[in-house]
Length: 247
Length: 273
Image (cartoon, rainbow over all chains, first blue to last red; front, side):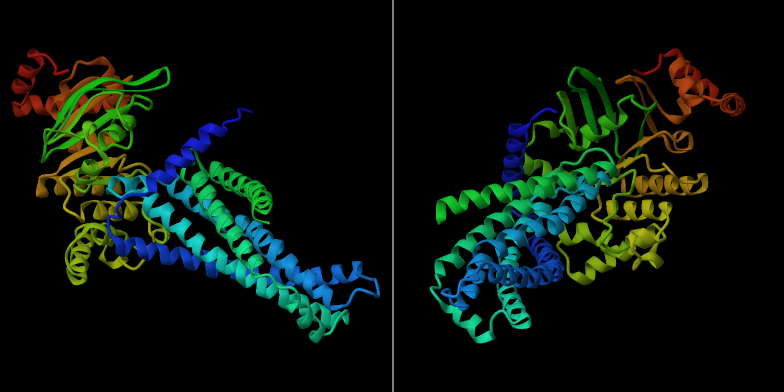
């Protein structure tokens, strides 16, 4: 298989450059942006809600399972859960799931528009399709994905508290006490920095693969799968890079 | 008026368009015909700017479209309407919203005026009753008519139709052809149709360009075609025994009408190439 990294990277940069032009009608672009905010934000809330609660619950139980020493206070479990969720699980795990949910949707939507000549129809009308179709998606992802990550953080911690109480590992008071121990606001900044980066990757990579689909229905599926795989790999790579740089 | 001056287009080693020149006049239905792989779709995409030409010029009212920057091209494109083979309607919008879209994007009037224009266009294509339906809820012929309504909503100077009759029954095809011809004459539009449909060729072809292996093989009108001696064109147009017989009958009819003198003169003058 031919490795076309520079070809794709160059085309990707050209796509981003192509987005920046004066909108033909700001009102229509705004409408498109709001629509994307609803699709990405509200459309993904359900899955984020479920995975966050369980993610927090499982983290509490597994941390409690490992911290069996009598000299370690129970509230430490909550502290570990908090930091794990804020630093890693809320931004990274949520974004990996969103790469599947949002990324595949963006890639297949644009791919379908390409195959059915809807993008050509917009071009013929004199509309900058990169600006009208891709830019609002990226901007909506940059706005909504950090919001979803923040919600995932809160829900994850709540799930951890609920799991601790339900299983009898630690009381609600102990959990709340642990949450306040050695809290660093910088961790929240770090999580937000990651979520912005991952949000950009999810929307732009999937838009790139969807926008450039050629062929038929089979290629839309392939583009969708490729976009999810590439997004996930890039998310994991950037996760490591940002952790090495910012922590 | 659209003028093509020696346009060439290739993909890699393969040359698809090998220097095509022609003039497409307003108020006429200009057809590009030819067998599959003859380069007619590439030619249409080069004319509307979906593909760039390797050399040659595409002139819209004597303005060189190929030399324009994106901003200038956008201005020209706002005068273009296009009907796509698969209609290319926006799935998430109703028929009315599809037709309204170009007006919302580029129109200057009030919402009431825009709505009135949409109604007028839908009425023109006899689809007023389907205004609130989604593309998935209407037939192929209706989709084509919505595509036409969307293409004409901004009063274009140029109308492009890519195989407008593909996948339609003969009656609906005739309806679409009639509609396109009427609109062309009514608004003095320069219409360019890429087609395989012989009914369209014989009924609507004011000006026909026959493409063969990337070159213009023949050029003329639907009346000239009956008397053409170009073997390749005849093999393409009158492919079946039935059509060959129909051609002979048509020649006979024209002979009786006295049109044959005019046609003979044209033939003796040589076919335009």
